Figure 1 (cartoon, rainbow over the protein chains, first blue to last red):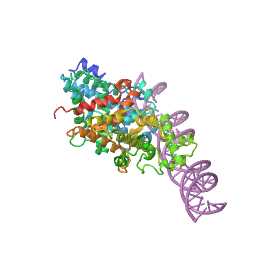
Figure 2 (cartoon, rainbow over the protein chains, first blue to last red; figure 1 turned 180 degrees about the vertical axis):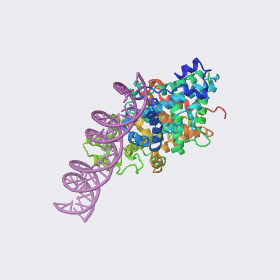
Figure 3 (cartoon, each protein chain N blue to C red; figure 1 turned 90 degrees about the vertical axis):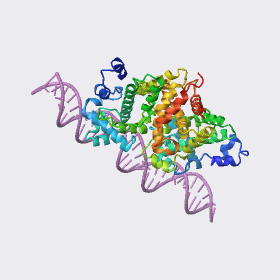
Figure 4 (cartoon, each protein chain N blue to C red; figure 1 turned 120 degrees about the horizontal axis):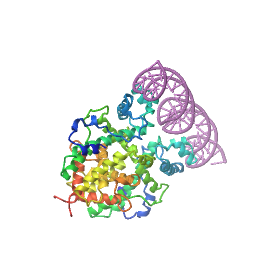
Length: 241
Length: 241
DNA sequence: CTTAGAATGATAGCAATACTATTATATTTG
DNA sequence: CAAATATAATAGTATTGCTATCATTCTAAG
């Protein structure tokens, strides 16, 4: 959807303010009531990020969240069926936001290699600046993605939830990077796997950097971005074609 | 420990029966009472694997497990402080078992490339045959590793638990593969990250294969092993040395 | 063989979780 | 202003994740 708009009329939109026009679109089956449509909804999202970051997803409850925002537990349940759905919302939002950056920042790059490199940079970099266009703190959200996002799909209900379209944004992102890989080397037979490896793997490297520094080279000097750009460029180097 | 024994006297031990002599060693702070030391303990381990596979880790409780094994909830608590500790036990056991295979199956390989290739094969292959030497069903345990193992470290207590040594086996495994990578290409600056990527990443590809086939190339023809052997060999190909 | 200690089982209890349901009170909108 | 809608307050329920206590059984040493 973002993409369509961009392809149709990229020039009339000014990059920086794009998000005041476009809305990050999260699959609407994830919520009962769209949190973007009310103050309470926005507060729920805003403070759920703070609270999950603070106590971790396991200890996070709607009751605690209600307390934080001076609102009632039962009101939150009118927006989200469960805390799991809220996590799905946050992760979907994040992937949509990433996709938006990916499309915008690579749009005008014509060189395939440069384009992929930029995409890897976007997908693997630490989110450090809060772009501040909304009630969502992207820096903290990124921390949640690193620490909790796997829990959104590591459940007994993945199959069903996948059928319901909850993971569409994520899958589209993988596909976008896959296409970039293939445009460099159409004969490479593992483009999807490489793409999904970059995305999930970089989160894992960020996690290791934080909690298990002894089993990653990533740290102050080496970033996951450097590792993955090296990995991908060597893998796609035209050794025999 | 396994390694020491093997290095000292590899010949007097017959591969197939090795595990009747050696015990898979799990860090002993993980349990209150070693489940290997009693019938009840073994039953706990055996049936926890069945039950977690059946209902998923979230819905798994000691009460349900007690029911399954005709034993009491409180008795299970005498072995493990919490279900989280039990998961740590299972994952540690699995990594130790993998390490054991890694050491044995690569021990006599002198060619560095061949050795690494074998190691990747071992670390990324689907566990399909139950080696049947014990009460542990490795095939099911492997499914649990794919679907649940991340939850053993994606918690607010990782730091502490890491300090307590709960992840030593896992980290040692990463280090072993790192060494093999470095023995092929000592100048490669990301050996640890590559090693951890192989191990975690292959679990992820197995997961995708099962639940999100549209974002992986892995399937009937292509296995995660093929993908990773290709990835690693291209990455370590001596392009400029 | 008996007897003490260890292991297991049974029962109870508790605070917290993850909700659902109902009713009351604001707030907005037509 | 009335009606619809959103939010809040309160209560209730089954389950979870434990802890604690006491009773029973098994086991191994004297």
